[in-house]
Image 1 (cartoon, one colour):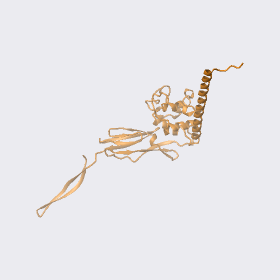
Image 2: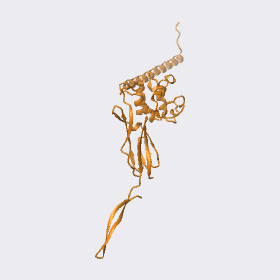
Image 3: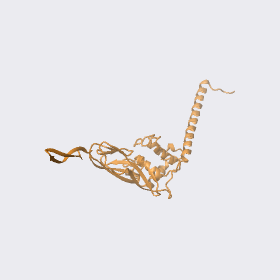
Image 4: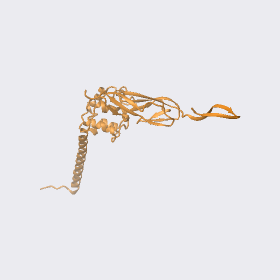
Length: 269
């Protein structure tokens, strides 16, 4: 004799199968999306740890003294201060902690990405938004196999700042452009990957994008630009605008008439 489930049991079984089906479908969708993203990233320009990843970690502040760059690191994860040891940093990210910081099979689930984007608790807070170009660089590097630089890759030699050093007028603004120069003669605009610091913010402040903002105070100061391990200064100062005035320079009397020659000069306030 065949036993039949009661209507109540059948209802529960139907619900369970529906949940399972939806779960499988959702998981398949996620995998499909990640596979598509990985396929696209794999065809991109080749990225390397030294040339592409280190600059991102530096500008995000991951290797700063207040974060993982300090002595002993942070929460078991240590990077070299300001990225001066690429070898140890690569080992710490890729190999240490049993490789749990990266997930090559599912890059978006990498702990490194989830931490910097604050998708999981992170003492440093949000460093890179998931939809930002710099987050994308890290993700594509993981997809491509977490590559290192090779002997044929160019080496960073120096950085330069433009325009040329100059004085600024009070309450004015000026945007700096940082260019990285490599051993093969190539260059990159790395303005958005450079960290800027002002020696006197009350005289001239600097934004994260390299924009200088002069205040009303006069004085000399310097901007320090740092891109990975290279540093370049940009010296400037703020001086008061000249005040135009009229001054007599000669006077003579001709036929009882006083003649005076006037000259326009300028002086500081």
